[in-house]
Image (cartoon, rainbow over all chains, first blue to last red):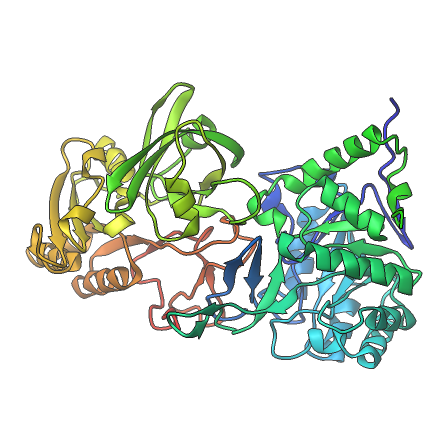
Length: 305
Length: 273
């Protein structure tokens, strides 16, 4: 039995395997060193970075839902400078693609953060967060307005030659529209989906369960919605896709590949199974081998309809 | 190293009043565990409930494969409810040990108080064993709503002096356990009082009150906080608490705590909605 080829090529970005950890669920990477060898992963997307450090929202910031969770962290992060000085160098010893997730309140802030990241040693690409539901300004504003999104992506495209991923919001009527806008602006890759805007209510107290009132829903609860959106975007555009939304195991990952994704991101699963992403790499190879698939990329879009 | 994997439940003992003692066959977790550190436990199959729950470790015991970890818990929601329904032999997903332990006093001769409120008793049997081994003479001050809620006293090693307080007066001092702490500290001379050490774990209002008592007497102490946690190891950024003098940010209870020095929590900013 020959080994399965797990490498995937997403435009300018080549990954040793299609398993990438999602922004906001994997810290700055090294927090997971006690649980797994970071070099087994196809890539790591670090916590969303802003120009200045952000303290995030007031707690409570999290609420568990049936097979899911709501969060409203508010992009607490160390800021791009501390990332470049302290966090990124710590990832240099690992053989994995480090991707920086970028957030801004205004177009100029996105551009300024990306300018600083461009050319940083050890950085394999940038993922634009245009889909955070938990901040008062920026984020999702860009993701739900195709014209604003195209202009933002084009502005960032001018200041970096790094592979550029745009992370799409599912909180739209037709996700094909922002997908096309991001591609028109110069995105190399699309990642989807970010969390669905939701809320929880404490009936006894007549209060929202999150201090921020609304939050983003993630976890297995959203997987069917996310699969559909990946399927939809794969039909709408020609760029490679990173699919995500409730992936808990290798079979879930295969489902996203079949829906049209070229790679997957693992999010909420990292919280409850911190070594799980690495396990999925081995399980995915085993699944392919069992199904006589020599190259994992054969699965992409392989849905029989 | 932090263990992440499956362990077997050896015993799940009903302590009454919705309190339980779970014994887990977890030598890889227990061997490096320190008092006030915790484990994230997922009980049950499937993805609902999805996230683990933090459990403080009450005692390290002897087991068939080395040490066991023993958890005292109170049923407060779905996660603990499912846990309480499990029988010996059930498998649990466990991540740990996690968090910063209670530091032991440098001088074993100082007065040491363990101040527990309700299920906040959880870390104290383990801490007591370590304190006794270090030559300290801890005194347990244990408060609860009613005498039936004063569980787990039989888990303490011999040689621990105990005093109890109940809200309804059904056992010991009728009133708050923080009043017992106040009384003990007030009885010490100034120099001894300033060297005294208190370890506190309980509901948030009780810990805020204990923190105020310690500040008033200029005594030292450490508080062990609890919170709902998404991960338990510092990445989900959910279980945050504001610290005094840190107006620009939050500490994470899971990795910066759960233990914090007395006087360091900004109780005013940490008020729930």
